[in-house]
Length: 54
Picture (cartoon, rainbow, N blue to C red):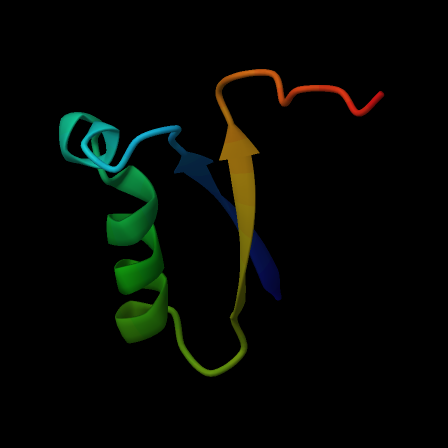
């Protein structure tokens, strides 16, 4: 079974300290309690719009 875990990508390093770390906790629980049949897929999730190329 594959589990997709979105991780928030912040624009500044200090924003990581402000947001909650639910994805990290979820990954930890899946790794240590999920069993051998689970694959974790990390996916970046952007809260802001990326600048468009010209």
